[in-house]
Amino acid sequence: MKTERTMMSIVGLGMAWLALGAKVQAARSPGVSGRARRVVRVVVAPNGSGNFTAIQEAVDHAPVEGSGRLIIEIQPGVYHERVIIPQDRPRVTLVGLGKRPQDTVITYNMSAKAAGGTFFSSTVEINGVAFHARNVTFENSYGPGSQAVALAIHSDRAVFRHCRFIGYQDTLFAAMGRQFYYKCTIEGAVDFIFGNARAVFDRCLIRSVGPGYITAQSRRRPQGQGGYVFYHCRLTGSHTAAKVFLGRPWRRYARVVYIDCWMGPQIRPAGWNNWNSVGKEKTAWYAEYGSFGPGAHPRKRVPWAHQLTRQQARHFFPQTFLRGKDGWNPLAVQNHHP
Image (tube, rainbow, N blue to C red; front, top):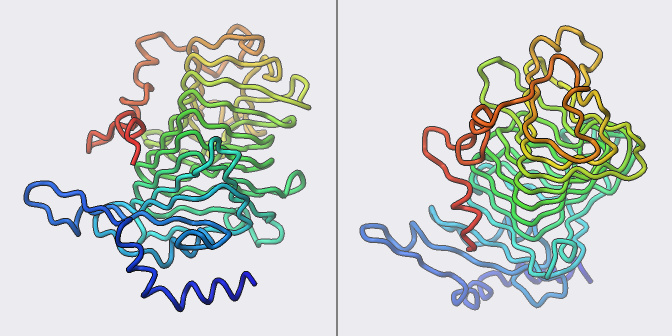
């Protein structure tokens, strides 16, 4: 039945676009054509009440939005599928239409062993620039025993609001570009936020579900722009004892900063791990400012980590750290609801 419905959807696309006309909104500004700036909205619903029954179908077959934005509105439900947004699909937004991100779940069960490598295991992979998501859960349900990526994001100027990222090892591959996460939940145990994006996690819940390492950042050069900033976040844990490190360096010049974060008792007093490489203690750059809670132990941290002053911490505030040469302001983006 699902295959038959999918075939009918594809065969009937010509008629569907006529019905879709009311959902295509042209946003014009002086001197700019409607096609160049238009917003295209489509709806995904597994019961056939929308324009598509699967998210990947919407990515592949929705009308071209010119230089505007494709907004894919997803009805509540559990979507057992793998989704890839290619480089030639920029400015895509996924919006869960439920009341909570738990209501709209994209999930798959794929391990690195079965996929042929960590980078092939992701449930969702984003390659187009300026990707946005709101109110959606991204999950890899494999669990312990292998790397298993829920979301791989290779997108500059990416914004996530009120989303969940659920996995165990290597949950979120924040790989490259500037990325901003606002009031999101990220869950895992081992290296569950990894990669070399320039990313800020603002007021997020970082939940460890076993002993391990929160971050495995991979900056390769001392002057590289990559790094993770956790800003006013809350670090919690279950089934961990006091066996969670704030991070370990996947690459030599890994950079991670925690600013004004509450840290639970699962955080080890030492804070940081050198990944069995004393040499990385001289090159990795790990820092905190204003940590508080039972897991905040500034005097017990490893001697090669940094405790910042307020003035030093300002360099890592979202508007500053993510600005770039184009002056991008992620706070302005996250306050805009398309």
